[in-house]
Length: 217
Image 1 (cartoon, rainbow, N blue to C red):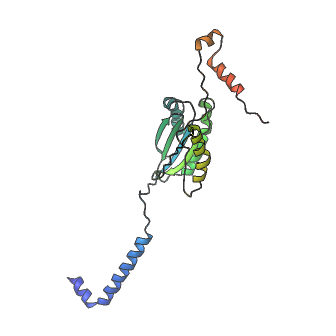
Image 2 (image 1 turned 90 degrees about the horizontal axis):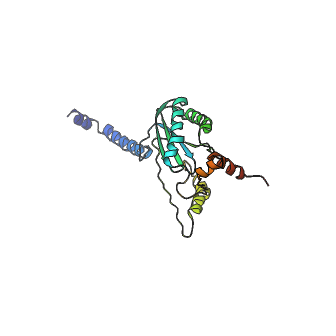
Image 3 (image 1 turned 30 degrees about the vertical axis):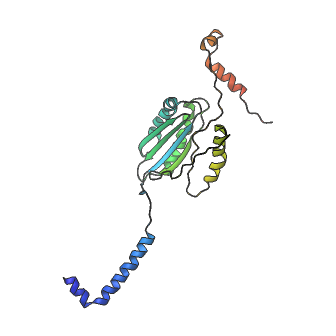
């Protein structure tokens, strides 16, 4: 009951204290940052490999496994690695230790990805490397559809037109679109007939590669 006697003896002091509590409480409510998800200080680097024509099993065996083995040897402060293989696409997520330098991690991953190309199937291109936090989640999913439009047209429209407009939004990180169809030529070989002519599948690949040239006009 001592606080009640003190309040009765000094009423002005308690009135001023109550006003300060109201003002400071209102300021705290206005200035307190809000977020749906808490900030998790775990830097993540995503590596996206693309190779048209490979099924998920081949992407995992011929690209993802080599990538994961190379990362564990050359990249520092790895907490764990996650990977996902799709048709023609493989996504490898490298979770670094908390407070690790993500710039150093990106530099090491970029360097080892360039040297890894010699171990990958012929025609493999360098991967797309994205950096973000573990608390970052996609908040928008855009689906494209159109009447009398082929899947190739939708893929081209989303990749070359819509993606270039969305990427200008501050803080946005837009990956390549999934789905659609891309131009692909598939050749079925008769291995018995090839052997009778003294040829191998590699000879056919080389013959197609020689004819598939882009020359300046």
